[in-house]
Every structure is written in structure tokens, then in C-alpha cells.
Image (cartoon, helix red, strand yellow):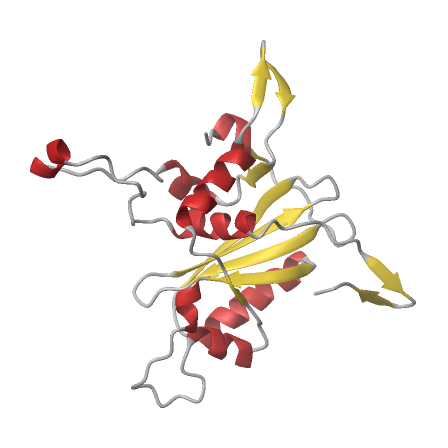
Length: 213
């Protein structure tokens, strides 16, 4: 259901008062780590507003994430990560043997995101759904993507169902899963939507801002 003409929009400022921001991270040992940010307004409209690819160690990744959020003044409410980031290597003598624990040591605290692929895909389809009548938008999508997130756009457009090939194509039903290739940003989106991110009001008490992050 994804369409550049409908879902991709020009970026606009994501300010602390009008938007709550959520962060999702998909880490991998052999390809760049994929970080994504989603902003939610009081109406529940969601905007994929920032993306980051990072190669290198966890400390460098953490520094890049913190800098990215600081420059844009995001008010981050929650952080989700691929559950594989919690896997500990028994051969690793590091005091923080998992990626998630290393990030926590750097001051970034994550929750394990969902691995329910089917539910994530269905929820994303719902968020992308819209209704046009005679060229007029009657029901707008729940989610949009800033055109400053080209990796997310490209991977979403290339996110297709896997198919059996050769002899298996004639003997089996169609596969019930997408191709496991360049799907890092779509999986981040699935995790965002599966956890139903909501707007959290901005509150300032005296000279200090408070929120539930």
C-alpha cells in the first residue's frame, strides 16, 4: 500500500511540545546498524522523521544516536530494539556481553521489540491505508515518511513477499513471509506500530521540562 505520491512528504520541524518521538534500532554484525525515529502528534498521526546508518562499534553507535537526537531536539519517549540484541556470547569476556547491555552502559536504554512479523505487517498496512474519492483525500494515512529518509523509502518499496522457485514453486503454496533482505527499516517500522506509540503531553515545571522518558 506504500506510495511515494501519498506517503512521502517534505520534512518539517519536530518540536518538543507538539510531538513525542520514538526510536527503533536494528543491529547487525555484518551490515550497518539501522536506526529510525518516529514522531507522533496529539491526533495520533505518525511521521518517520529520521534515520541513521552506522558502521563500527557500539560506543560509536551510541554517540551517533545521541548526537542525532540532540541536534534535532527530539523528545524521546521510548526505545525499541531487535530482540537479538539481547543475545549474550558465552565466549565473550566483556562485562557487557550483549549489544543491548553495551548500549545501556552508554546511557541508552531499550526494550525488546516484537518479533511477530505477521502482526507487524498487518499493522503497517493499516497505518498506510487511505481513501481517495475523485482525487480528494477522504481518509488520510495514519503514517507518513519524510523524504529525508531515503533508506526507509527504498527498503519499503523493495519489501516484497518471498516466492518458491524451481520445482518447489509448483509443489508448494506461496511463502507466508517477505524476503529476508534489506528489510531493516521496515522491521523497525513494524516494531513501532506493533507497540502503538502515542502522544505524551509536554509538561514544563518552572525552568525544567518533564516527560515520562
